[in-house]
Structure formats: structure tokens, C-alpha cells
Image (cartoon, rainbow, N blue to C red; front, top):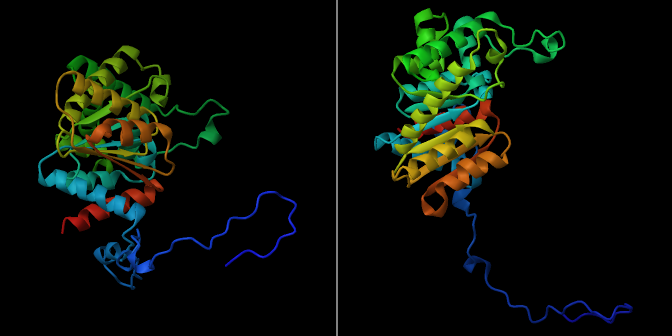
Length: 324
């Protein structure tokens, strides 16, 4: 339709749309179709029914792709390394990781120092996560005796025996026969001979303030674990998966250095999948886990956003349902 006369003082006039080209809606390519829409999930439905009811769009597609990558890796005998931060253990997700390990969907773990502390305390007394606000003012924060003594003793033994920190703490706990060993990732991985590497930044963990802490022991144990992680990352080639559960700084940096080390030494490292899980998508994991390691068509990176206590069990259930 033509524009009516205007009393505007502007020299420019609105564009006339009379000659605009249109097309039939049914002939237009669309990104969403009726088959992709969600369906109500009825009461009493199975987990499989629940996943079938989800819309086949956006994050759901990514979740399915990540779960399928882990399933395929197990079927092909490829490595699946799960990196996790301390908050994942504090959120009560250790048993989920243990179950995935037992089912063969995880072959190795990488974690930071706080992860070890929370897992150690759960194994020993069935409780963790100190109220920092209540104890920091008096200087009592971080003073748990058994935690400092046990972890630092494991560090000393690791340095003496030429093993990494993850294996050493698992061994220490196994020898102690703690009452909650069945809920400890470190104990269960040690029993199954599944590698656990621990990547410590000195000064970040409460065990470093204890009088039994020894920087040489800590450094030797965690550096050996870094070298072990490099060997594990090498096995991601052609079908492996690296999962970053909730670590925003330490593990993304460590993983990137492991990737470049493997490639620098001449080992092929392509065709693998990386997945970052967190309740906020931070720059570092998006760059160092999702994008850089698989750049140039060397693999696929996936980012999934959600609270750990919801997203990780959902992911684990998706893996189990896809396997049926």
C-alpha cells in the first residue's frame, strides 16, 4: 500500500514496501518443526519417556550429543576423562561419578585440591563443606586436624613412592577403611585402578596451612599427576571425551597444557569431544575446553549450562537411557 501524505518536516521519508518480494510459508526452510516440539510427560512415566518428551532443540540436542559421545567412547574402548571441581563433590554428586565409573562410562578422573578435601572428609566422617563465614573471623577456618594430617601424609608418601597425589590419597583412605568409603570417588577409583590426577595450586587448599604441609611433597605429587594426565589425554584421540564438571579455572588451564604437550611430543590428538558443564559459562572453560582444543575441525566442543546438582544427574541418566 502507498504511504499517505505526510506533514513531517524531515527530508527523509519512510521506505515504500509495495515492491517487497514474499514467498509461501510452507516453502521456507525453518529451524523448528512440529516433530521437534515437547510433549507432556504423563505421571508415572519412565526416565526414557521423559527424555523422549523433551523438545529436540538447543540444549536438549547438545545434551543428547554429549551423552551419545560418551556412550560411543565406551563402545569403542576410548578414554572418557571426567574433570571436576570441589563444588561437584559438595553438591553430593560423588555417587553419580562412581556409578558412571562402574558402568564404564568414565575411565579416569582429574580434579583440583578442594575436590580431594571434600571427598576425603566425606569418606572419613560422612560430612564436608565448612561454614566459612562462621569460622573465618576467629581464624578457625581450615583447621580440621584429620584433613590436614591425612592429605599431607598422603603427599609425603606420594613423593617417597613415586606416585601421584590422586593415587596416594586413594591409597591412604583405603588403608584407613573409612566408614563412608562407598561414597568416596578417590576410594572407589583406587579400588578399580582407575587413574585420578590432582592438580593443586599451592595456597588454595586448607591442607596447605597445616604444619604438616610440605611444598616439595605437594609439588612432586601434583606434577607427576600432570604428566599422568598428559598420558591420559593422549588416549582421547579418535573418539574420546573430556568432561569438565564445574571447574572454571584450574582444570581448563591444566587440560589445555596437556593437549599442547601431547601434540608437541608428536602424538596425534584429533576427533575427540569436549563438554563443559557449569551454572555459568565462564571465559576460561569455554575457551580452553570447548573451543581451542577442538579448533580447526579436530573435534567437537559442547557447552551445557545448569546447576550441578540438577544437570550432572540429568546427564548421567541420559547416558544410561541412551545405552538401552
